[in-house]
Length: 148
Image (cartoon, rainbow, N blue to C red):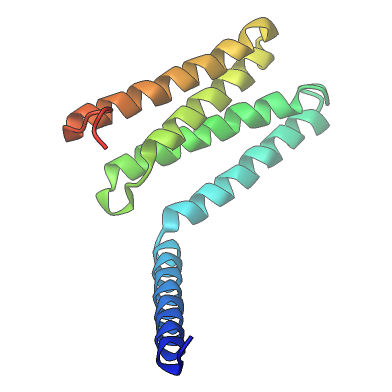
């Protein structure tokens, strides 16, 4: 390899590193400017605290705390999706939060109500929702599954 080729390769490498640092900086700026994520983290801790409080106060048994936490986490995810849908500047990947929230809320509720036999169907429903959303957005954009 000639010295010119080595120099060119080094310049490309340095340029790629600069672009990567710029992208990381932009992502960090987006996270810093997103107060919804901070509120979400706080709500998760609140839900966890409520679940433990219910156990300590004797309202539920230690074997049930996780079902209440999972259901509460699902509710928080759905609330997060609703807030993001209402505020366009923070709208991103809402469908994942909705599907995840419904799955977690469903799993928690089924266990709280002691209907444990059908929990796999909640996962199946979540998978179907993701597939339907993918097909819907694909058709809405006008793209086809057969296009390359």
